[in-house]
Image 1 (tube, one colour):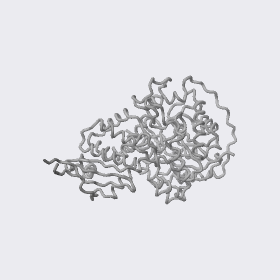
Image 2: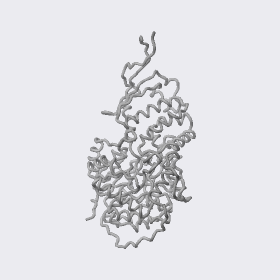
Image 3: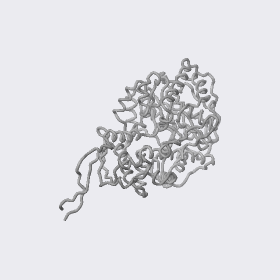
Length: 494
Length: 70
């Protein structure tokens, strides 16, 4: 008998910054969807495995909500699909929080670069061909067995114009779900973005998917930039989409949860009150699903596709690698397929979005270094600096690795900004200690407190921040600490 | 003959970098060390640092566009 998800209700993606809200609004937020990888830390060694905190895992399991696990970072749409390295930790989280089902993205993240497997820096859409259906379905079947839970794939946003050789979005989702015999996490916002960008009408997509396979729905806010509507998770759900959801959701016989998504960097601007207001909207939508009436309209056979020789999943990923990686990291011998002008525009957008994540990671984890650079060289030069870094350094999945690579880049390309070397060394050591759970000593020739005071006042560190070489020790075990081992020059007999 | 060498002398936590503040700084790093969440728009953290007063987010229904990102 096919899996029938329990009716959990409306909820939201769990964010650390909203933790207290989840604890204090159990009656309103019925489901907490945890993205475990967003809570994991990866060591700075290239081959280290990301790990979560057992304490945080146990604590989350006691949240007053029902919990769901939603994977990020290990999508199931490509030829590179991890079924081993992250699975052990992923299973621990899934079992601890008793997630009735799990989900991941029908997307591509890792590609073959000149130096081997490589993150391309962004969730990229797969081709929508029969070969891709077969590939994704095989990945899902293996992932389901590895995790030991019913599995649903998430329908993704797609900023490309569909090619003649591809099936429609709805047919593709249906074909993958049927071939893998799995559930669908229907991201209505992604479909809405695709609709508004002219890729596919949302009503056409919804008319083609198997309604009984939709176990979960995602909703979020969108925004417009660089000629595209974007799945930005930036705030309020578009009221027009709420109307569409209200019409569509009653037709889903196996809906288990409706989840509101908000990006962590939008929380402070959006606000807790507005967040809870969105959950109230989800409750109204949930009420419409009390007596689901499954559609009995038969779905017609999908139209035949115009085959495009050579456009295989492997060739598509090779194209992604060629357009998303720095020149030195691209696969050799170019791309074996022709590229449309529209595709180049879309790749340009994807590269821009990926760059925003990379610059954002540096700004978040090296906040004071970023401020110092801003004061020291100005905004335009800072943007140029980051562009140069991104253009020669391949993307990585975890922001801690990004910081380590940026520090190496800065060490190799030093700038004459007062205090920069010491501040970057200090902040990078914080990241390294956190990432490796290690105690690290770093020697500084500047007084960090004096520098931060200067930065807070919007000025470059002055001579008052000069100090004798000082060793600072940073660690995270058993609790985060920073202490100063004061060292000073002494004269001692030889 | 004498020469200058480094020698550890004391361990201290200065008043303006208190233990509590230090832990907070490090905890902030720990809290931001995870894999990015699953959205496909602009991450605005860099813009927030560069110009916190000018983070532009939305397009209203009249299509008044506020560009996001650099």
